[in-house]
Image 1 (cartoon, one colour):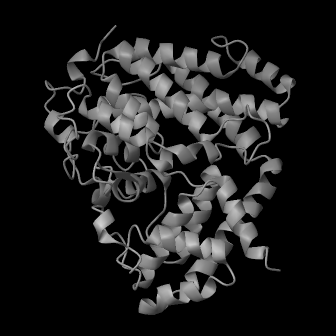
Image 2 (tube, rainbow, N blue to C red; image 1 turned 180 degrees about the vertical axis):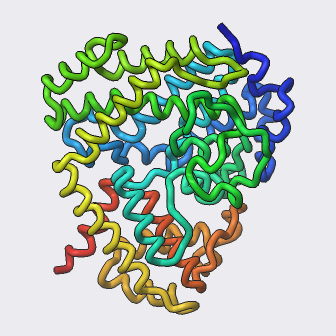
Length: 404
């Protein structure tokens, strides 16, 4: 099949030098040059070893803090996207190492409590007069500025991923208006020019594959989980089965297989990555079914109110400490009331600000925030909260009320 082999991201691609460019070169390995791994394979390794990736196992996909171990977490969703994008890229002749790296990093910026948590944080940033919050931009922010790995001297360094992987992370968000996805040609400043989800198409065909794999991955998985949680009944699935000739026994694997095979059969470099009309119609109907019967279900509304309380309360308490250059002093005064929250927050701040707790002998990463400025301090709180897992943010909230 390999219909896109001439367009794979490799040394023969005109976008190659831009795609493998890094803000800073990676530090030299202690035992000589790393010739075993490609640039994208090194990115893959750096992502799966960073803390934000590890925390994905504790973040909501759709259903918050499930007791059932078989309910999908954000990490399982990421693994599904990696698997689907690998299958598509391999069949079409694209660079599978690039799709793997983008896939494992694409949801690094997701908040606790899934898309509901994302909406709550965006409501807060709007109230604070800050720029729009969305998980793709937050993912780029984490990859560029907040995820740290120690080098051979024990110094903390930013990940410094390649442009192609960073582009795939911020570019995966949002839908696609037409059936026939193609990469853009422009080499843009991702941090400055990408201000809204789907404002630009991704830079590589591989990133376009991940964007589609993200959509394919969740449709059936959310139906399976809704069945497990009792939101859907078997009779609902029977009605779905009656709608489609192409898919019988609606479930994750059958939906993925149908859409992936159809996409690979119908895509070509001239028209782009595309589904047949029947498959596109089927996918859209399934997405609409999920929106109507799962994501807007009454059973999820208590979770939304619960999460809104937690995130707003934590933000308010930390924001109340702001007083220009006295902010750190105020935070330390608050430790007698909220020792766990304040200790953790100050410790986190010390990695990314020029406060006295930072020992610069241990760091080579950027100083991101000047917390003497109110908006910078608010951004720091938002970033801190966005990185938390579901259980951790619940733990922090419970620590607030434990003194009562």
